[in-house]
Length: 84
Image (cartoon, rainbow, N blue to C red; front, side):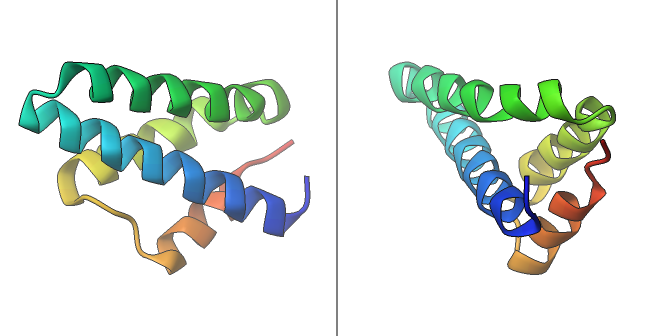
């Protein structure tokens, strides 16, 4: 996976996680579940390809839950941390 592809995928995962936490706070269960399923689908490729994906994705989840959306430079940083 190229760096650009990883950045696109991490951006999508971050967006879905932000949606999940937003819907969760608003009590919108159907939308919350849909956003989380989309996140799981996107992250499953990383779990298969990268040995440290659980750690990196868990850190990303904590950041998004705490602060909301990730800024582009953070997304690039997370994308660069995945190791084969």
